[in-house]
Amino acid sequence: MGAVLLSPLCSVQGHAGEARSDGRAQIACDRMDQEVGDNGEQWFRRSLMAERCHAFQAVALRLGMGSLRTFLFEHRIDDGQEQERIQFLDGPAETIEHDGHPPGLWWTGRSDGSFHLASIDDTVEQLQKHYDFSLVARDVVAGRKAVVLDITPRDDQRFPHRLWLDVASGLPLRQQLLNAQGYAVDTIQIVRIDSLVRSSDTLYLQEPDGDAMPEASWQPQWLPEGFYRQPATLEVTLNGASLQREIYSDGLSAMSLFAGPVNDNTALREGVHQLGNFRAAARHVQHDGDTWQVIAVGALPAEVLTRVVSRVHLQESDSAPDDKQDNSAASS
Image (cartoon, rainbow, N blue to C red):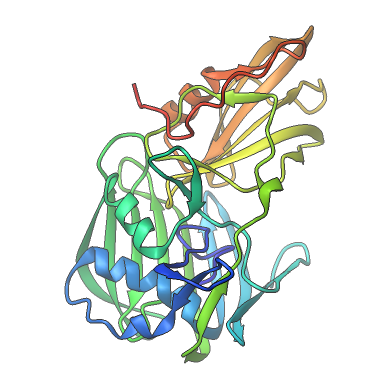
């Protein structure tokens, strides 16, 4: 239902086992015809393909922690390439457009320590290590019949998700991030969908170039199991402060990790904070004679974010870089 705002993965996946001669991953939309029955994993796989393989327009809303935003979302497919347009209908005027495929490719690790663009089949296989998928009910959302899919973590290092999937198309009509007590903390729902057409094209995806994951002067020494670093711009501005950022994901949950010198006017105080619908953990540390802040933000338990920032290693500027640690660190 759109990788930027609506996809539970916030990512793009290619079809397993298929690649063009130029090496680009691809999604064969004719796989949408496969039967899924009552299998939760198969319904989730179908929803990932449906997001990519349907052209449509939709009005949707996002609700959480006292905030509500409404937006118009359009997903187009032209000659095997995707275009997306998101126009916010309330609050500050804002429009986001992407040509080609949306950003945010989910990379996962190989046994040799290298990384690659995850296929849809890879994604489901990886997620099954950390989540259980089960159909729990049938419902109606935006006037369309839906199945309700619960995605339950197998550990205490991530939160549950609940998806309402359109029976006819497989598109997510509603999705919720739940806290440990089972209450929704973030909800995205389509309230109207128009011009829904399934493409018969094969969609082609281009992996980011080698500069997509530049080396930072620091690295986490611990991550929740199954989390891998994702392509993202390294230098960013957060709350007026210039920081370095790395993004990590297990394919469903995501976390942004920031580090940089403290500015007294913009520093986030140490501890756990609520930032919109998500939590943040901040730590201050002495580095090269300055005070640095390390911040983890994401839809993860506060204890996990706190442990991540407590285990970030800042490389001294006059010493040689350490060997890069595997991004899927052990949970011990």
